[in-house]
Length: 190
Image (cartoon, rainbow, N blue to C red):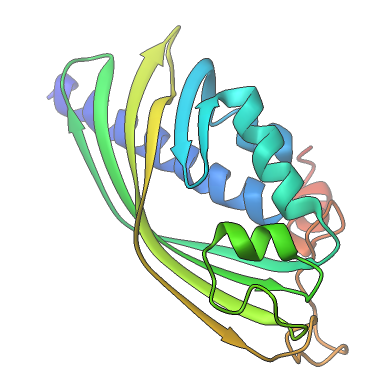
């Protein structure tokens, strides 16, 4: 019974790491993305292969561009298989919905998008999987090795940078002023 309970706790910790990664990228919280990986963690991610800090710099450069308007990562199936008490193979499905302005040339080209040279806004939907080796070190689960698997991508032109949303609504932001951070502060969280 104690081992079963520990497995449930471990799975919950691993899923939390995955959720923090998605929030980190979408809210441009690069320290949160960095905390997903161990310092020597490695990621194969599209045109990038390398260690954690170089990966964070790569993603930050792509997402911090003013022309990279929106990013939403939706996580789906998450299968966690334990090889030992300290190693787990984790496969997590994702859908990333992105919106890029016409000046996002390098980001659009990286996606191999047929509309990379267009002067219109571009919406992108990427479906794939994070195939991770998680390790527990000093009682903490993090990614030691990630392979970002791309299963399909779809691009289309059009749309406004603000997504056509009513400005009177509570809108998402890609910075520390996003409502999730306001809510966390109101609850007394940092």
